[in-house]
Length: 350
Image (cartoon, rainbow, N blue to C red; front, side, top):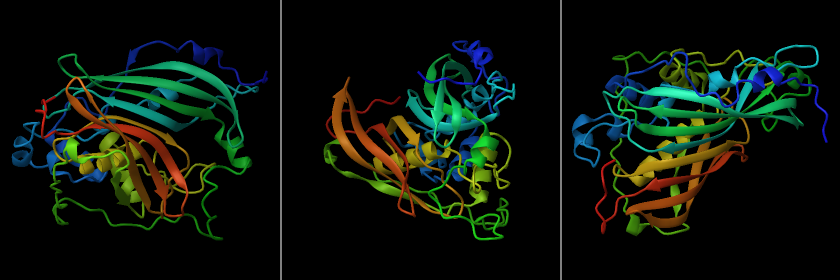
């Protein structure tokens, strides 16, 4: 049995308490909010941007991308609850995302009002080679619309640890080559893209994909992005938390600015939606953060169909998914499920 010096007694008093997020960045869903989020991913799917096009799909109007609900709520505030202390009484304030599992039940539409509730479901003492003594916190979130309907649920894990002590042990992100002497970051400064000063991003009109045309073992068209820069991170943060803070100043245990783990959900959602076409519906994305995604490098997300099934008349496809750095190592792995249109069965609007 391992002996731990961390005191989590105060933190455990929060476990199981379902509470509303103190303040959300957004409550109302607007066309502009969806547009800004889509540009930030970036995912220029016309389903999120073109009223006339979206009205001619099964959705009968613009809907929000998978993962858009981060613009309304986040489990990050749960991971910041006080009450995890070391042997000297120092509060462990560093929190890093580890895994996430999203379930999407209903589309989020312009005019909706979204409320987010969360709770700490569990807290377990761990000992990690890189993080040392730490606490693995399980967080749960649910998102409801103005009708009280649950539109999505999120289950996530994050680590709470001592960042300074982790830095002394060599830090994280060790799969990357070290910065050169005198080099502060691999980020390249980019000018601000003010509306009206740059061409409007070209919208993407995806072809439909039908359930009957998919086979187990099929590859999902990869999603390529990068090289990632701090501007990309700041743009995403501005769309979700209201600030362009890009962490270019780094943390002591991380060697450079990085993409937050939650951004991977958006990349996977963009990949799956593009592959599935305008009539598809991503029902589930579950992924684990295995390595950091640092600025200056490109990534490729991919996937492979593992199973086809029909459940209650819905044509569902399961897939393994992953994200890899241009350096050759894997940054994320997980599974997903997507509902496709069928030539043989009418697809119900959700």
